[in-house]
Length: 269
Image 1 (cartoon, helix red, strand yellow):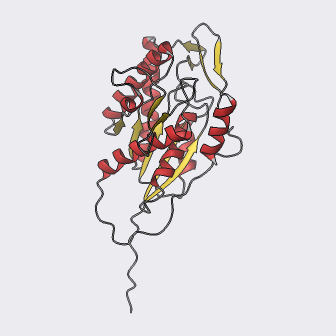
Image 2 (cartoon, rainbow, N blue to C red):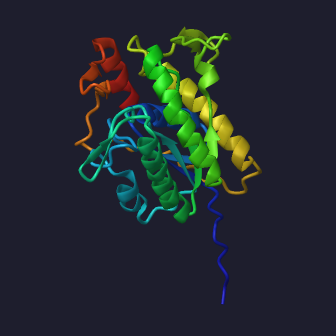
Image 3 (cartoon, rainbow, N blue to C red):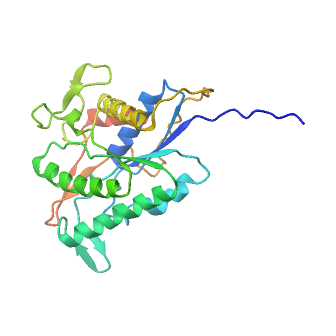
């Protein structure tokens, strides 16, 4: 009987999971990967999700459903901007950055990594970008250091692109070269969110790291599929409310301004 040669599927499918910042990065990565048929990007983000509070959104529990029936090669993770807060364990609230909190947070990162490792995915865990507020930035560095330690201990890739969003002296800046090499404002005045051109730059840098990690050998029969961009499901708000617990029980929220709202609308459009 006749043997029909099956076309080789060389598509590299990447799932992007994260919070509002992760959603922006995923959109930027999708745009930057668009000219390359090799990559297919699927974005799944939950605006205010994190690792510290699974009761808000439980990534380890949700991932099997998200990945069901889909052949992903890799996952990009950007989480942590909302993790500067107490972790609930039973009747206890573990206060941010205490030894008890640190141990619980490490265990939660491991739980997420174990799900991704079990699925056979290469993990590209992205460092939390620099933040404009000095105290917030210091706390994010604490969170990021724990993430890095656990990611490396699980044999996965930690991608630190922070220097691209700092001055040569290592200070926070909202300006930088965009994906075309032009110096522009990359981030919003809240010191947290990225504009569309900032997400493009973030995505461009990440794509370069991914390509370096997986090698870019020749592709025999590249399918002409363009990357698929999945919009957030309807229950996920388009405009993020950035905020965090202040440790004393108060909650500080940064409502993005109108310009940012229009930028974010473009990001997910």
